[in-house]
Length: 111
Length: 111
Image 1 (cartoon, rainbow over the protein chains, first blue to last red):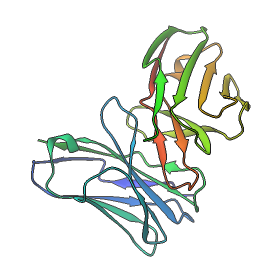
Image 2: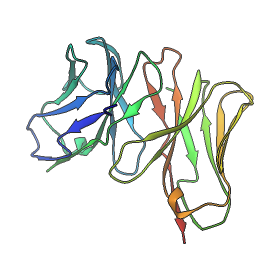
Image 3: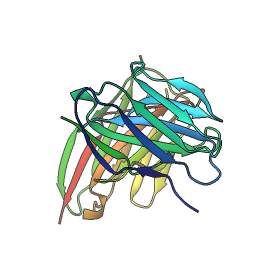
């Protein structure tokens, strides 16, 4: 079975730019969650999508937005990038709300 | 706001030693999970504990969930260099929509 895949693996952006990160969920999974992990910290919940609808959001500003497609893959969009947005962005998929399977993340650096 | 505190933050030991990592919560979660994360990879689920007082074993790893379901510990017996990694505890909310992670314990096992 195919696991969770994220692209790109690394990305460098300039402050003020916009970025789109992509996630292909594990086969058969209909729930996708996104987390931000700053260096030396645990992951922080951004939001979750269940059957193409947002199903919970963490304490992140509106410039963090997402989308889930009919095939359950997902995108995370961040507008007006700030230096503090530099982090590892993790996508995790699951079937309904069972234990999460994480991808290896996208390392975003904002300069 | 529900918070999870892990201790110690860093731990460096010699191969063959035993260790315990602690996770304490300010409130009750429906269940608690332990993950291990290696550099460049996403967190990998080790165990889920649900019932107060529960003890689960995974080879040399022993996980305990406190009676009040607000604290947990991970004990590793005879640590090996392959146990090196970031150990994260995460509380699962009743709705199942999000995980609240602790800051993690960075374990280094020296040969």
